[in-house]
Image (cartoon, rainbow, N blue to C red; front, side, top):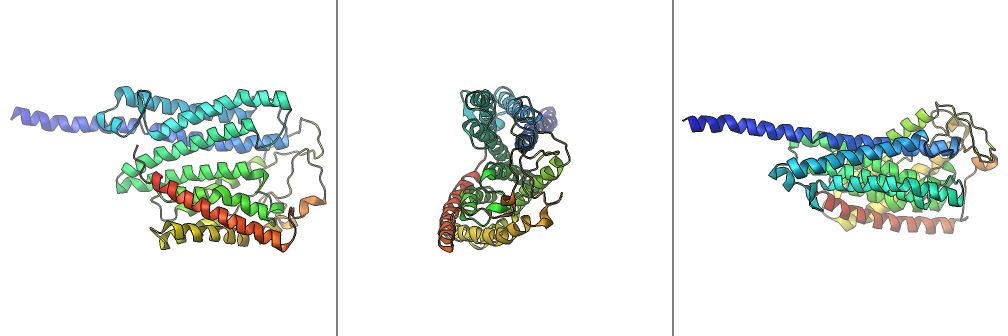
Length: 393
């Protein structure tokens, strides 16, 4: 009898201890999500800093924020790996990936790699500027190393959330689904920010290049991240988070004063130059969610229709939206139109569409290329999403 009583009393204590350890190790996930938000804030702030003030020093506030956020992500994931390796239970170790004798979630390993990439980009960027001058381009070799590190941390956050979501009970999946959508929205924000030089302004939305550029990665991200989601409108939620984050940063940056410091100064701005108004990605995202419900299990048909729908809906949404952005009605705090870099020579070009290939035939040919690209991107996204839906570690 005494043995039976002891076993009954010991089992709840062991379960309580396991639950406490599990709760203790949830905080790295929130730390990584916090770092992801901080990184994308630092990135957009950094671009605004370059456009408003210039590149004065590596130790500018947005640079420091980005690197500190990377260290938070990497160190929290490193702690998780060490805790799981040396103090984890058998069940906890079974839900991890082994690397160099250490055990940790797949997402944690991806975050650690991304942190190392971001840290390595700092001296590379300084060397690049010393060797080739002070540029303000988004796409350059050191900036791409930094971008890949940032994206890796976002992907790591998604994988960590997915692993927990796929192992969770139905009651917990709603909360984890929202966390996953938030990390997917941050990833989408990162991608669109990298495209800012080619597909962001209303001036570009009457040219086929805008639709070709947006068709490369946006359908892939929306499809890949929505397939493993437990939400009813996953792509729409992801796009809404991207737009909400972009709007908050746009409205916030406009509030702060700024003075250009790096010549030549042709446009003496007095406040931080905000990012452009976010793309209307909620519109194609709604189309994606509706198509996914109709064509479950038919990926090639879904990819074909989604790719064509993406270009058609983007064209319908942005063609007239671009005309509004170039009108006087958008030149205010809310829409933040007509705000240019301090080294831009202002002229009538600000209110014209930039057409690189004139004529109906080049436009239609470009839209056809964009549709084919979007179909391939959508199909690749579905394939990646199927793999992500099986993530358990």
